[in-house]
Image 1 (cartoon, one colour):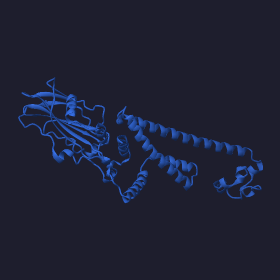
Image 2 (cartoon, helix red, strand yellow):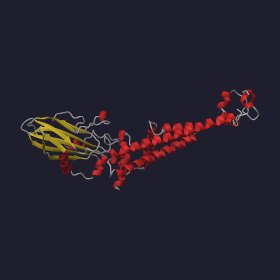
Image 3 (cartoon, one colour):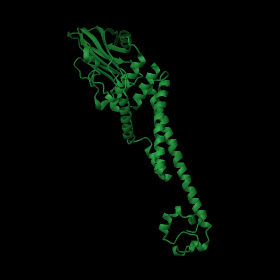
Image 4 (cartoon, one colour):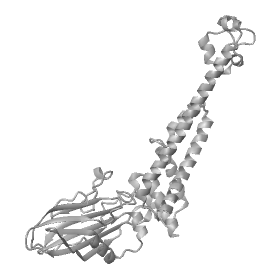
Length: 367
């Protein structure tokens, strides 16, 4: 049952439009943020971990203390060139709602460093989840501006190119301000971060009436047609095929049905392949290979189609040359008004050529 739900989650992540994604940065991302500051004459690191739907589901039950110890081991802080130990002293855990009835994870961890008796030069590196894609941000200072508001609200203009800051250096001055506090209550859920749409929440319901099912199918059919009008989906290849083959409306309908079926099967196959290989390779490393395979398939299909069209053109040209060479000289020299018996009715060559596909006499070389 758990594997089936994960398959549905993967398919929802692959097929849902951008506005329906639960997590703004994608369902596979693991995002992290660090704020290094001085308080109570000590160095502190406020660490925030934001996991999207798929990593949260794969993680299962999350032990905040165990995660805090792991995060502390991966957060490397050096003061005046000396490696210092960071100890987790507080945690705050929440599971904001994501897409398709799944949840995400927001974990805040307060790491305490050594006492400060002078201004120290710091060098900080975050090595946690180094092989996972996502937002990576580090700031120094309690009042320093965060582009993502500590992973509470990701800027829309950076969603396609998220920050990738994993190390910083600077100065840390001792201060007597109170120890940093973790987020509590509704703010911990980061409600503004989630860009979920109500339509995707339908699959999270336990009971669906017949009217809701029919309405959902109708809406899916409509938005599927609208989505098919967007760039891609093989429309260029289909149009080229129909033009090259003098296709009829029935051919177009058959091709549309085939494209629809193969597109749907491809989405399911992609989800199953991603699920099967996720145990051996993380999805963000798998996606480039899947894109490469898709590109190679398009090139192969396009090359085959171009080769077939070129072969047909050469065959037609060779047939025409052969036919012309075997024509009777009288037929070659005759004017359009002196067509031999059994040939096309007398008409100007341009008119005759435009209708030669329907003229059986032309195939014998007398028109």
